[in-house]
Amino acid sequence: MAMAATLHGPDTHSQTTDGASRIARVDVVRDMAEAERRWRAFEGPDFLFTPYQRFELLNAWQQTIGRHDCAVPFVVIACDTDNRPLLLLPLVINRENGARVARFMGGKHPTFNMALWRRDFAETVTEAELDGLIAAIRRQPNGPDVLAFTQQPLRWRAIANPLAKLSGQPSTNPCPLLIMAPDCKPEERVSASTRRRLRNKERKLQSLPGYRYFVATTDADINRLLDAFFIIKPQRMALSKLPDIFSDEATKRFIRDACLATLPNGARAIELHAMECESEMISIFATVADGERFSTMFNTYTISDNARYSPGLILLRYMIDHFGERGYSSADFGVGSDEYKLTFCKHDEPMVDAFIPLTARGKFAALGMSSLTHAKRLVKQNPALMQMAQMLRNAISR
Image 1 (cartoon, rainbow, N blue to C red):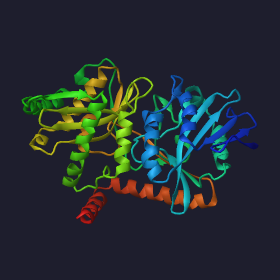
Image 2: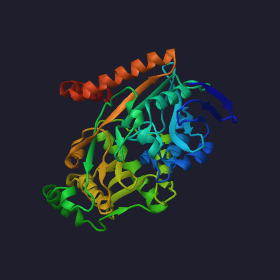
Image 3: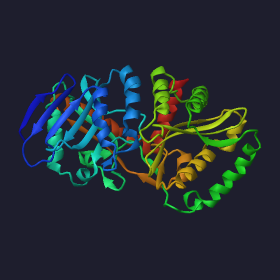
Image 4: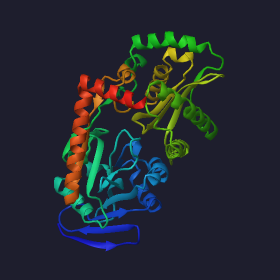
C-alpha cells in the first residue's frame, strides 16, 4: 500500500494512502491541546469507546503521571477521503529496556484499553485496513518499536473490538462481570440472600449519627472524600501488607484532577460514591460510567471497628441499585478475582493483550512482553505458584 508523507506542523504527522481502504489518511498528534480538538469528534453517539478513553480522564493522567514518567503523547487518528474520523488510538511512547514502546494512555488505572471507533467502521473494518493502519504507524518518524495493546475487551456494547484480533493472547487477569437486565427487580441484580445478609450488617451502621449513602457532585464534597481517601488508603494497604500505589504526588494529582474534571454532559470523569457518618468516612468507591456499563476504579474503607460490617460490600449494593435503576445493563469491579467481586459477579469479561513489533528491536521487546504476560497468567491460575508469589511479596515488604 503506497504511502505519501506530509508534515502538518510540529506536532502532527500525516500519511495518505492509496487503494480500496477506507483509511485515506493517518495523522499522529503529539500535543494534547491539539489532540483535544480532534478527540471531540469521536465522542458522539455514532462512536464506540469505553469511559476510560474519554479525553478528560486521559488528559488528567498525561498531565500528571504521564509527564512525570516522561511518556510522550502519540495519538493516532485515521480519517476517510471526506476527512471524517474513523478511529483514534490514544497512545503514549516511553522507553522500556532500550525499546520505544507505545501503550494506551492511562497506565495501570484503566481496566479497559481500546481505540475510539466510528461505530459502522468498527463493525466492518477489514484485515487489510488494519494492516494498513499498522503500516502507517510503522512509517511515522520517531515512532515506536512495538505496540503494546494490553487489557483490551474482546467486545464493547455488543460490537467486536477490531484491534483485539491482532495477535491477541489472554490478559494476565480476568475481569469479573455483573450482567443486569434493564428494568429487572432488585433481587435479580443482587440476590435476596446477599441482600438479607448485608441488611443485617448494615443495621449496625444505620445507628451511627448522620449515616448515609451519597454520590459526590460538588467540588467541596469531592475534595473532602479524596482528603479522607488519601489518609485511609495507606493505612488500609499497610494492614494488607501491600504497597501503597497512591502515595506519589503525581498519582494523587491525577486522581484529584480526574475526579474534579467535568464531562460535556455535566458528569464527572470519575464519579465518587461513599458512605459516611458524622464521625468518619466509612467507605468510598470511584467509578466511571457510560450509560450502559459502570466500572469501579479504586476504593477504600474505614480502619475503625465499623470495618467488621462489610461497608465496602454494602456500598457496592447501593451502587448496583443506583445504576440499575437508571437502566444500566452491566458492571465490573476491575481485574482480579477478589472475593468481594465474586459476591456480585457471575461472569467474566474476556480481555486480550497484543504485542505488535514494528522494528527489529521491537521483535525482541514484543517476545519478552508476551512471554512475561504468559508467565504471570500461569502463576495467577496455579494456586501453589500464587501462594509462593504471595509469600515472596510479604517477605520483601517486611
